Length: 75
Image 1 (cartoon, rainbow, N blue to C red):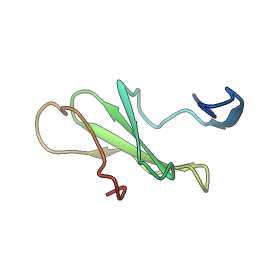
Image 2: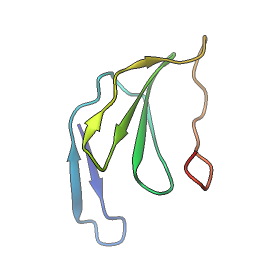
Image 3: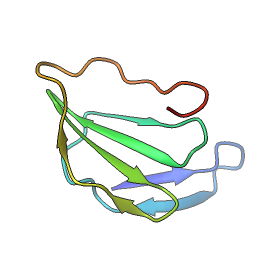
Image 4: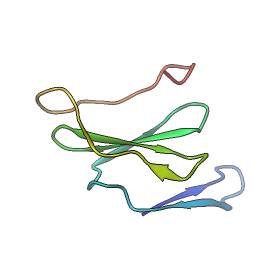
C-alpha cells in the first residue's frame, strides 16, 4: 500500500489501497490528482487520488519502461 503525506507537515493525508501490480516506481502528476505505478518491465496502473480508485493494470509499450515524468500541466 502507499501512504501519502503532506510534505510540509508530515501529516498523513491518505492511505491508498495496494496497486493491482507490484510497482518498482511511482510518479505523481504535479496537480496531485493522479499517481502512476510502474511494474518493470512494461506494465502500469493509474490511481485517481480524488476517487481513491486504481485503474486496471495496462501493458505499456514493448520493452523496459524507462523513466516516467509528467509535464507541468499534468499530461
